[in-house]
Image (cartoon, rainbow over all chains, first blue to last red; front, side):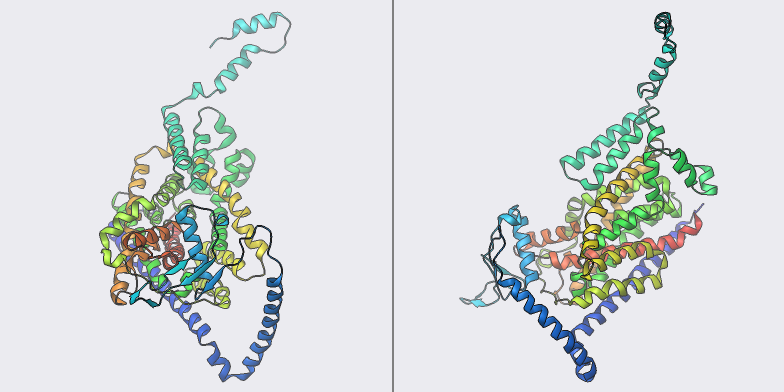
Length: 139
Length: 415
């Protein structure tokens, strides 16, 4: 039951591989469109002011949330914290990745490491390019 | 052994119990009188897998359970009456009439009851729910071209499928063997239980063993297929992804994928539901449960019940050896496929894409991405490719699920 010839196997392999590619390329196009819509969202809201009003309402709500977050931030630090980390031209996502890599490379748990400052170095210093791309200085 | 003298002596003292018969029954029920060479070999293999899992940390979360299940079902004697009954799942009457679940519940042992979750696809799908809740699709969303690399790395599945047919396996069996190249345990189990249940243990063990061996299998192929200059390419940081995109992604992907391949709905549906629980921001408790408690419970049930299916009567065959070899071929060609397209993309973008991230398209998350990162660091200190490699890595999960859905659509009617 279910016996197939070698030729069948070759054809099924080719079709199967092509289907995986087609489905994933379609998904890629969808994801690209989503990204485009997210990046160019302001163009749509400029063209349709009614939508803009809606977003403004939401914006007001989110500013309230930001205020609430600020209030939380002003509260004293929790017990056991390592204090504050200064990020200079570095996004939070990149900083989290760098801290994880340092913890992995030094085989030290994150709660035993203390990061004071993470600064992106992409400037030309002393005539030499220090780092490029996602290079970062960790202190 | 004759217990008549003992029985006679005790009987003479006024007892109504037939001790001779009792002792003889006890003796017969021990494993020693029922020992077969197959039991010994399987117990040794189970202990070897336990050693690998505990000492070398080879996928320990799954391999410990699989090896222990294997150990339990291969202990000789009537212990199998209390644990697992293969005839309830694989027999001629089952092939004709299907599994009799009433009989399983009435006569089945512990593993039989747990195995219902495998047979009905509940465990692999719940594992995918947890995987979805644990996966951050941001690297994929910020670099959608990763999906092409995730597709390319499924090459190994089809090479292994083709070779398996050449070696005399049936179509459904070959499809189950090929899916090992997807480096995705739950997907392999999901497909195999439907198409070739008698090969389930061998395929699950091959899949998880090779996933653990990715840091050994992939680097030589990566160095062989790429130049040091290519491996040293530093990729630019990708764009930031908005919260709305992260929420919309699972919803849109499940609609789009299931329109093309409805057979993939159980696996991808659970993966995307888990991801939506994570990203929507209002179901933190459910997301936490899917990632931790549920995932752990299902992992225990799945690994023990799959391991228990490795009874020596079905496991110690030449088929198992072939599956092990073809699994390795599948993994190697999956890496080749990913690297090949990675090199093409590197050339097309004039050196902006490091081809090493292509090998992460095999969906062993995050092991394959870590291997790409390590090879990048070896070629150039400070060249961190982890975030870039995570894109093809999670794309590989979708790719292998699509490949499994395709096989299911083609071969399920033949079984």
